[in-house]
Length: 156
Image (cartoon, rainbow, N blue to C red; front, side, top):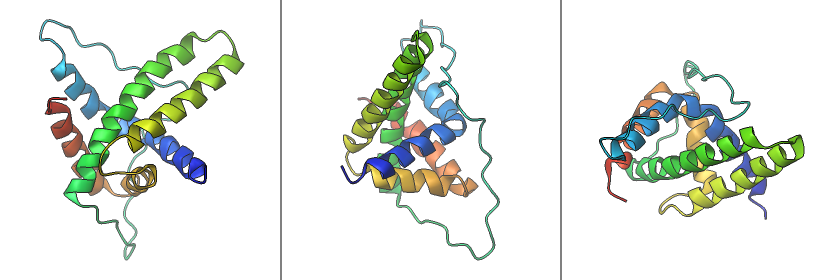
């Protein structure tokens, strides 16, 4: 598959930025649960990097201009990727061997790519581009967080 490396890069970017964006997705997911259900602590993926700070914009550096429609698609995909990440992070933590942990991580990566590709209006490459752009653009992060909050409120 020619897009495997780019897709893996997109997923790696998703996991790197997840600590920044996940609180919004987590809050929205909790809001969708029955009101009597107490919120669960968000699962942290194994070996998750610390929350990255958006790098200051370099003067004169081009910033990506993503449409609201594309960011809505990204938000829907992000929520699905987050669900896969939560499911597999628990399984990886419980796996008895490093080999099984690695196999689960690889399966999770495939499922994450499937989640993105299964979302209307976005490809894994576009998802990765948005994730990469967000690492250097605090305004884009804010737009994404808003879109994730809105997407999570929509009935599924």
